[in-house]
Length: 99
Image 1: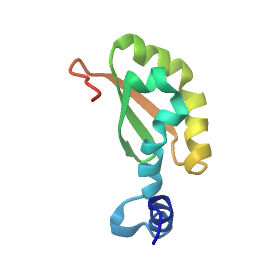
Image 2: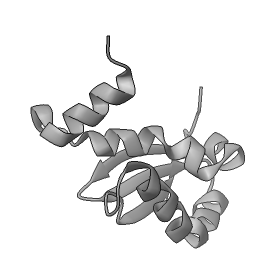
Image 3: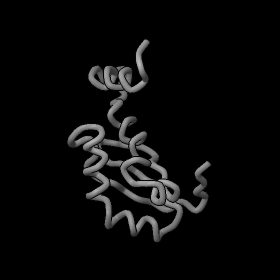
């Protein structure tokens, strides 16, 4: 029996079904990389060509994260592999709800 992390790792090497599983791994690593306070007020949405799109609870959170983005990128890439995340784009969503 394989662990999910092992399966994701193996699939990421093969780029099975056209999905780069390093992107999935980066989204799953978000909470660990940013910490509880930020995680509760943000949600990673998608990654396209190395750009991570993150929804924030308020414009203030988007501004705060903009200042921290290079550190967050470093932490995420440490988890998933150098160069996976190149940029973070933040946007406020007034309907933000993290359940």
